[in-house]
Image (cartoon, rainbow, N blue to C red):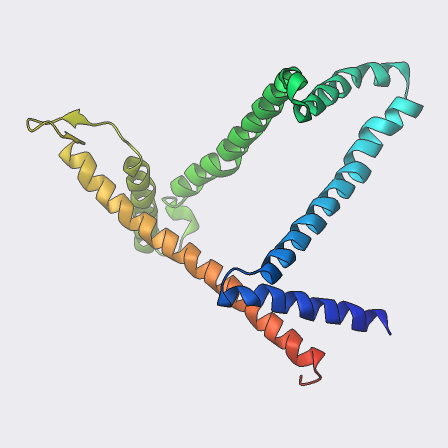
Length: 220
């Protein structure tokens, strides 16, 4: 039996097991999910070991200079403490490692959001009003104003400052509420476009699986 036939048969089997969720949650679907999660976890662990731990930690510890080994002492210690999280009596020892991990991750995420999303978005919004780069000034002004309105109203939508009214309820200022309503319209269109993209991707995956069925049985 050829390897291609075995791979095709397994792919066909797991595809049917995933499709079995259409009739409800069942053991076949769970087995397919468990296999997928297990294979994914094993792959990530193998990649992390071969591309991160092996070249950046183990090799320098064995073959590196004294300076390299000294610099690796801190991450090695934090890694060892992090493993203590797996044992309840010593789980407190892993708290410093978790604090460093969460702090660095938060700093990277915030820095990436500011430098990779917020600042470029501000720059693009400002550049939309640069009439020198457009052959149609009216179109450039309209597009710039529309994008600026979307950015501002969406940001105002997430402004939750409010005051207590005479009847005891907590409400935002009338102008803020109106601008936030416009922002909610922009958000609705954005989420609709994102949902359409997800649905399109799912439909593409379904078509690919159906095409696989056809080629597997020699119908394509």
